[in-house]
Image 1 (cartoon, one colour):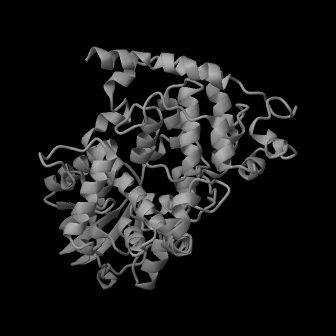
Image 2: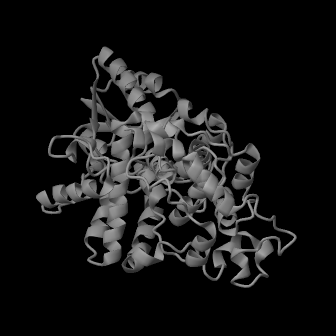
Image 3: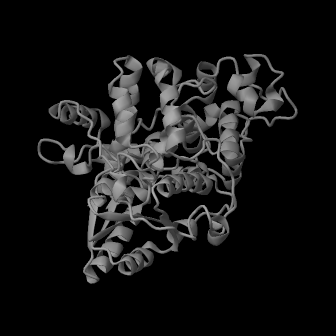
Length: 462
């Protein structure tokens, strides 16, 4: 019997659930450049394509050492996977589960076609540590608040003696063949209509492991350092987790072996990721609308001109503009800045959170639907366990607290570099090269509270 293992958001050859099970027999690996996804990308220079390409090159290089090769296809997976499985005469196709609505629908289509060909499909838990059905209330209900979810998550971990399993992949059972159409030989950029655009962080397991190793030395200070964008306080590992160069278990092993308070906070961030994946899996409507339906009644009066200024980093609020310019130029944004910019767009510029979510989806190197959607709904108060609607980040105080010397602002808004450490947070027209604030924070804060009153009235009525 021969097997086929379909790589998707798990671009690695270690600790890989589907691959480990597939390698019980001779296995061929396949990756499909999915037209359903690629056709929605507006930018031919999208850095994520290069990150994926770099990851595939690393996989192929390792396969070549073992006399094997990665099959790379371009098209619709519901067509390409069954055709390849039939051509290779495999008995089973293996993949790891994905919890996004599109992915679940795609995988169901692939499975139906395979079964019509008498080929078995097997999927596995891999990209999260605990799935939705594994962390539930005592009545089997789904948690909608993070803290009790986290407590139950940790309780489940304790029940297995804090063991983090590893899926051993015996690569000796890879199918031996050479492939003239491999990612190393063919011009896949041209084939799929994209251009090389190397990201700031290189793709691949080696790069991910190197970054994880360097982060260990800074993990102890994570709790405080993670809030300051000018400092290397975060791990920058989210993209390696998003594309599966590292497994979630790789990260948890590192975090749980470290007894520091910083490590506990970092592990909590990994649990947040499981939480948002669970919410998307069990409440797929959040992809299009608010987790709390009453928040869809809000009418956002923000203008397209203000949204454009936010996108371009030209709002006249330095910390917001620095964050957005960094995102536009690098595809990366510090987590504290994601909260500041999201709160600013929805609650100061009064623009619908879905517009900001879509912009981040276009730009973020580490874009993950569940995390991005969860973060935006948290900031706009429309999601599960979100901040109260009346909590509105003050961009000035956030700037003074988390970039006190203006180091990050000066890096990305160089027209303000000559202002002193106090003025740089409130330039207010002091520099002719930089725009004055496009709105009044105080006035729009009050407008925001009025805008959200429809939700309060609805709650009072109930």
